[in-house]
Length: 161
Image 1 (cartoon, rainbow, N blue to C red):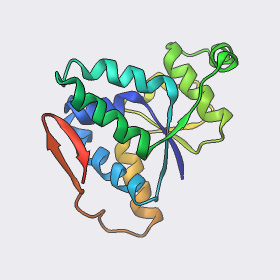
Image 2: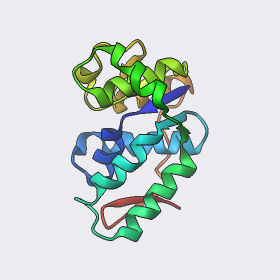
Image 3: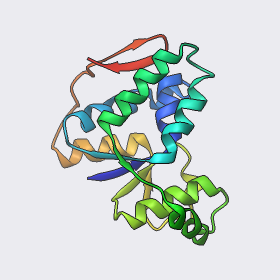
């Protein structure tokens, strides 16, 4: 299962902005680590996530460590000039979300995971929530429950052991 993650999913889990999705986020990090899900991020998301994290994590080294973790865990899709221009064809309400929609379609990904499905109404790739992804993982792998996460929280940030 090839999945592009919206930045808000990553940021919400790290910052605990949306407690309802923290458990799901930890579960799909486990699924990525266990190779059940092949996770993708667009290259431009990395700098966006690093920037937004400043609000929640003051120590630059901690933010850097988290970005390094993302770079190891996720496949990074390069965004070029053509992609930036072509994403206008999606015709959604938000250019960043249109870029993710276009990128997911171009790379033939199965899903986009976001906490704001309404932002992807024009997406040609199916859009699901973190909770929906976890349910799909459990169903696809005939799991009653995903194992306890191997993550711990340090200064509002999750790190893999």
